[in-house]
Image 1 (cartoon, rainbow, N blue to C red):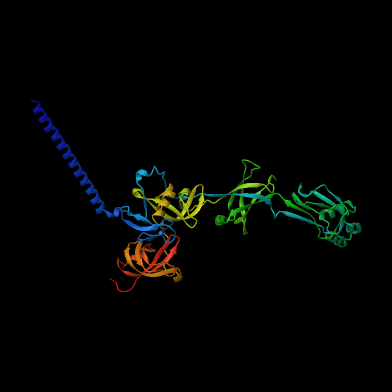
Image 2 (image 1 turned 180 degrees about the vertical axis):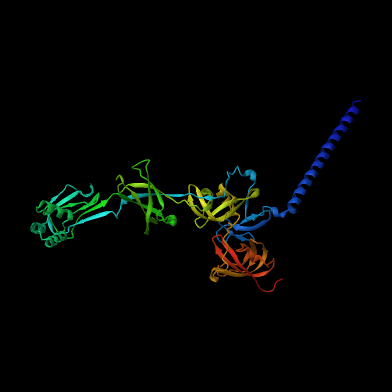
Length: 494
């Protein structure tokens, strides 16, 4: 009985062992089948890991058909793999990662771009409002009134008393002729007094009072600042000596330094608003009266003169002002947020957002900028979307992939022959944007023969050409590398 139980247990154990072994074998075969299938699928889709070309990350415009060391830098070339179907001139990002990358967008808008240029200025004297007081006769300074340069004078303020001996004799003769009643001689005597520098009012006063008045009182003909006072008691003055100079304060010049790049938008008569720290909350309105022809070589600025009224006399030369020059225009322009523009120093780019998470670098021509907005003169269309945050990350990825920013600027129909570099080659692949060529050496560039992909300067260059054609190549050197400008068939075609 015990032996039968033992035999039964043994049979059950053996069955279990065979079951486990069979299950393990079946699972192993299934896993091997899956691995083989995955491997086969990978081999059936070689483009997923096939290198399209190799490039130098420091000079991504140049592409090479095999790995090796870069001819530009002491480093190994980096492979660029195929990323599936799509436009190779764009950077593709999974739309689900957009928020994680912090990408923000804005729409290209058309409208009137109201703008103003904010600069600083300094108040100065109006050099057109100047009175120069000179001696019209020889005399001696008897008295100087208590004034000094820098004093603010009222109109007709007395400056000095001058004794004019010549007047005494002339006035005595004038009074004698007046008593005699000879009209002709009296008129001649009056004319002589005028020629000696006497004013008409002083002559009338002498004739009325009948007393000789040999003293001349110098007065300021206008109100303003006494700039010069060249008289002292006891000194002798001669005809033509400048005795005083007064600068009026009824209007003030505001001297403004405008950056050289902004002067094209400034015109005479343009409205200006000025705010002075000396008078908080007060806005003064004026107009551009002159744009001076000289440029400051150190600051690269142009001086612009603005004339401001100074009826209450509060404005004084030397004060500083914050100046706003309104540059509003009725012309409608396209604009984007200024943060969307990538400035490289040689050109301006934006990252254009397209469907399905694609982003394309586009070269644009920018105009005036104000209040965080930049006018776009060329390169974009109304309604397109541009990246305003994260665009530098996308631009770096585009550079690493060797993507060249597109531009509406077409290459010139003909260029100087000296700007082209020529070689013979054969077309490996061609489309309306680029061509892959197995070319010989470009002797003028010192470049050996190799197989490379070049952008086409004009899509029309591909017309009538196909893979395998032998061509004469002409390339030009641009900021983004070499670009094909001409493809001419040459020799016998296969």
